[in-house]
Each structure stands twice: as structure tokens, then as C-alpha cells.
Image (tube, rainbow, N blue to C red; front, side, top):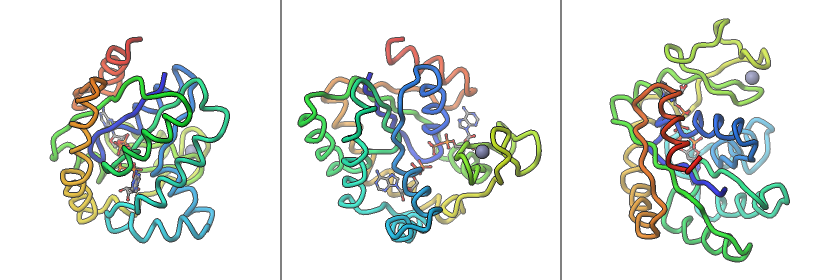
Length: 214
Ligand code: ADP
Ligand code: ADP
Ligand code: ZN
């Protein structure tokens, strides 16, 4: 089981990835989360990456491919993994193909979560994330039981620096120009599955399980 979750920012990739990870006990690799964690730890890589992220731009292919390559070299991903938010450019997709080929493997399915721009704006502007464990909440659809406190670890919830209106707008433009062309790339390989992301968390999850054949 080697999965890739795609979709515009805010579609629900991270939320569904978390469910799949819990269900199948497979490791997930989220480049966005890796960058945010590195920034929180005060590392140079994270600080450099956040300069791009904050304004809604993509981090360079070079840096992004490098951290994924390092992550994929660890043993825990041998049988299965879930990539969330990587690749986001054709250059990254080609780099990933080479990494997987070198490992003697390939992707089993690409899940593309689809949602309209209105829904995406609404989701990102109300998204809150735990500073400590990264769990994602939504002020209306997935509120924490105590305001601004994580249900899982008591960590503080914050609004991501890139979830402002302007940054969201920019990310959606970049998604259209740089990431959407990848759908064609995976369609041609015959492994692309579209899922309607504009349903409840559980309904989307049911559809995800269906398309990955479980
Ligand atoms: P992505 O990783 O694609 O950017 P997230 O999983 O972080 O998306 O979801 C974006 C926001 O929308 C979060 O606040 C999340 O709680 C909320 N959300 C995700 N899926 C749904 C859904 N099916 N229904 C309602 N809200 C959702
Ligand atoms: P979302 O799907 O809500 O945009 P992510 O956590 O996947 O959230 O990504 C947050 C930001 O991190 C992106 O807007 C981008 O700046 C950076 N990032 C994440 N993954 C990549 C990638 N594969 N290539 C370049 N930049 C990335
Ligand atoms: Zn937490």
C-alpha cells in the first residue's frame, strides 16, 4: 500500500490521511508538516521554508525533494506509506518516480480529493492546528471541546501563518498552475482516483477506502 493524497489546499488531505494512518497503521509523510515542525524547532531549513510558505508560495523543488528522499530512506516505509502534499510540481513527481524506482517500488494509488474554492476558503480560514501534536481542527466542523486547547494533548491551537485570506488565494492560484497538471500525469499512469471532498469526514473516508480497494 503506497498511497499519494492530492487535492487543493484545504480539501481535507491531512484529515483523511490521519484517518487512513490510524486505520491501517501506516506511516504518513507530509512535507507541509515536516516544514512546520522544522520551523517550530527553530531549524534553519524550517525558517528558510517558512519564508515561502507564509506568503503562499511553494518551497523549492530542490529542498523539498531532498527532505522526502531522506525520509524515504528510513526502513519504516518499506511495505507501505502515505504521501500527503508531495509531489506538488511535475519536477517533484519525476523526482519521486526515480526515488521509488531506485527502491524497486511504485505508487499503488493516487487519491485526489476535490472541493470547490468557496469550500476551500471556508475550511482554511477556520482551520486550527495543535502546536504540539499537529492535530487539525475546524472551528465549526471539528471544534476542540475546550476553545484553543487540543483534545489529544492539551497543546495550544493556533492559526497557520499561511491560512490568511491573501495567502489562501495565492495557494489556490499556485495549485491551479503548478499542481493540477499532475492529475494528468497520474491519470495517464492509470492510478488516479477522484473523491468528492465536499461530504462529511466519514463519508469522504468511506469513499477513500473504496478507491484504494479496502
Ligand atoms: P488539507 O490537508 O487538504 O489542507 P485539512 O485536512 O487540513 O486539509 O482540512 C482543512 C480544514 O477543513 C480543517 O480545518 C479540517 O478540520 C476541515 N475539514 C477537512 N475535511 C472536512 C470535511 N469533510 N468536512 C468539514 N470540514 C473538513
Ligand atoms: P495545504 O495542503 O493546506 O496547503 P500543506 O501542509 O500540505 O498544506 O502545505 C503547506 C505549505 O508548505 C504549502 O503551501 C507550501 O508552501 C509548502 N509545501 C508543502 N508541501 C510542498 C511541496 N511538495 N512542494 C513545495 N512546497 C510545499
Ligand atoms: Zn495536540
